[in-house]
Length: 236
Ligand SMILES: [Mg+2]
Image 1: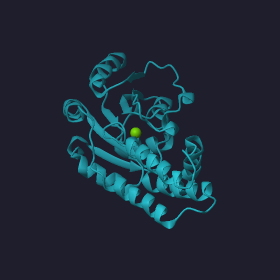
Image 2: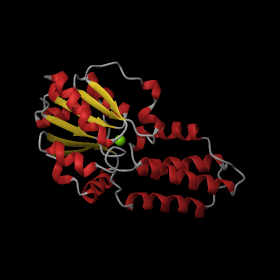
Image 3: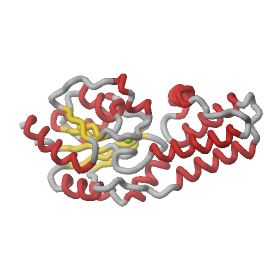
Image 4: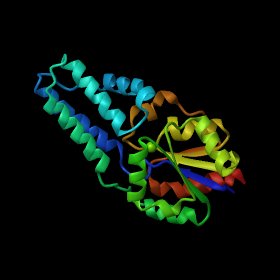
């Protein structure tokens, strides 16, 4: 039987990516004033990914990348008022209500009676801590970790810290890159919650998933219990 179940937070338990998409739409409106249509979203993704090494993940990193991008594409003609509008959008993102997906309370209530739960989320520390508090979900979790990157070493450190056996650990999340692949690599188990809105960096189909006995994909939260039971039978 599994001992620990790990949950990702952004786009797994609560909405996240939609807020980023809204601000990108606002950016397009701003750029129309400069006779620039939609900014090349692939180019924007590339800049954001390149900037992770400086800023890490999260809203602050996103908005700094946006500002860098608009300064470049407008050939430094962007008006300070438009930069201020982008900064205000970031503040709105940082203070927005936490919108849980349907079924989150039910699934956590059910699973927490059978397993120890671990929340692992990455991004701006301050923002993540605020969202965790506002979510009202803290009491379901035995442990909560906010990290700057979710790679194999991060997971190993967390497992070490909480004395978790990876062979009896199952991770649930929407990101192949951050939630699924590192865990499968380490010998753990995973359920991929395939959301329609997941940032391309996190869910690039090119990442591929190694066919594994220790892995299932679901499309909604209410399919998780069933998937968990299936994997539980394989573990037994
Ligand atoms: Mg996520």
